[in-house]
Length: 258
Ligand SMILES: Nc1ncnc2c1ncn2[C@@H]1O[C@H](COP(=O)(O)OP(=O)(O)OP(=O)(O)O)[C@@H](O)[C@H]1O
Image 1 (spheres, rainbow, N blue to C red):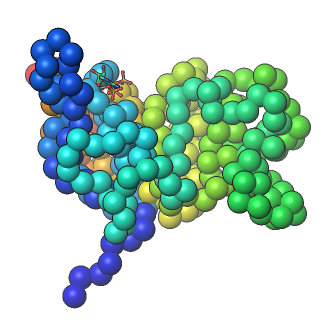
Image 2 (cartoon, rainbow, N blue to C red):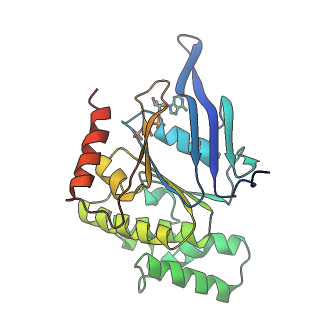
């Protein structure tokens, strides 16, 4: 008898998403026949050119958009709507933080909704605010924070809700290079200290190689699919200057030059 699927595993089978094109009156496939299994606790990167359908695939897993056909399951459950088991981190923290709430109030928002008592809320928010390096900034409002700090608040809020799965859509795309590197390091540390499954969308090969245990290459759309999956046999923290890193970078780059 096979074991039941873990609640933080993601199964995608023959997944299609199409929109009808008003002019042609025919179906326009954004993604077509996508098959993917992401194991529990895995850090999986979706890499592809702009407009290929990465965000669409992530939104299908999040339950924000409905599929045209095929299957998306988390553990044994079919995804039909957003759920507390899956949290999404977007590129722009501005659109997800409440401007009238402080850092701590933003981080505790979901806990308050779940009616967690104040002392427990504080314990949890303290932990994640410290984890993302924002201790001492608890009383500030989003307008008083830099872009990188706002992104950390978003991450702390998502983590404090303790989702099994983190869906991240180019979360560091708007940050300057130095902050981005810091956030990448912190994310890897956080992921390694938990059992969370991460799906991370990017179009940056270097970022994919710094973070991912596996990297799924999405072909250019329309009718995009995952054309190749790379295993990344490099230990963390990844060394940008190592020959293995360089060699994998070149191999992945070649997919986008064909
Ligand atoms: N609601 C919609 N109706 C019609 N087409 C859509 C809709 N949403 C997305 N698309 C199209 O789907 C395609 C994929 O978009 P998506 O945002 O998933 O790509 P992406 O790979 O995440 O791009 P980027 O890296 O630029 O963010 C694009 O051609 C986009 O125009």
